[in-house]
Image (cartoon, rainbow, N blue to C red; front, side):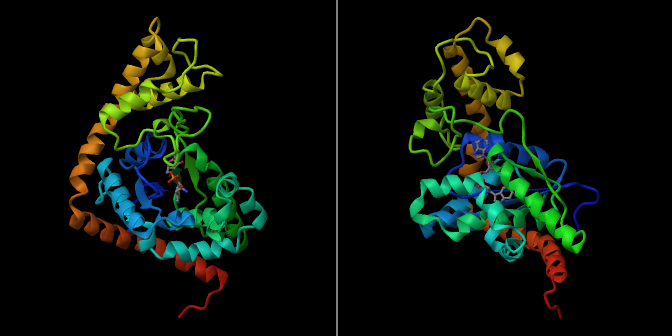
Length: 334
Ligand code: TYM
């Protein structure tokens, strides 16, 4: 089992913390699918990361299966790509421990996601939350990834991954590829529909603020209709028009049109027409995903077989890097 010759390597992951939003889809998953045609891709359901918020065990199990089904439903072919569940590949936790010892307390303490989550949940600031970026670095470095398709909110975690990789390579010689983030232009930072200064998040208590990837057409239309805009009523991309900019970003991602083309398309029209077009584009974008998800989720035997195959393929590649890193730090080997 060798990586296909000369293909660049891509790795990314998503937490199984609920049905992903349109933000997850346009910021990350859609690019996962596009990249799968040209790269050797490893895509994971990051269940180890998700226990930092202590989910109910049965719920975590269900969401892991659902997230896995959703990854196949967006069109990732489990034969062409390695689609796996993070906890099925023990090398992730093993390398994460090593990387913890090459990351400084100060740099991990500067992570904005750690600071935000600690502030929001002061009752559970666990060590896992703090060590989260080093586990993410392990996910990436194990596969010698060239590119990591993520949304803008993960950029800082990519930077610390690069810093740790460079530090380790500097001490022990070339061990890890230093990865580049792949952050799309339009979809990297999809905002809440109700407060477009905040990112769209599936944990938002206001369900009108986000579109879930499995929402039905009626819900999508309703939520986009009630999206916050401004009093100007011109469809144009400009500073201070966060709500309209966000809808334009969504429309651009779904249709492939540029902001200029969108401005021309809606010249002389109001926000009502614009919102109707955005809603229709989102419905059409998500319709095949939902149909395929509904079909796959009933086929647990198939999903489990794909998971097993994914875990074997991932373990093979990850094991090579893990052994190399263990040897470099001086662990005794037989
Ligand atoms: P997670 O599970 O929160 O989100 C998955 C992906 O969705 C992107 N994203 C967004 N993009 C645009 N607009 C939004 N509103 C939006 N919300 C989320 C995220 O940037 C991400 O790409 N720590 C990661 C999961 C992870 C990972 C990794 C990613 C674990 N190991 C290794 C890359 C490489 C996370 O919590 O993403």
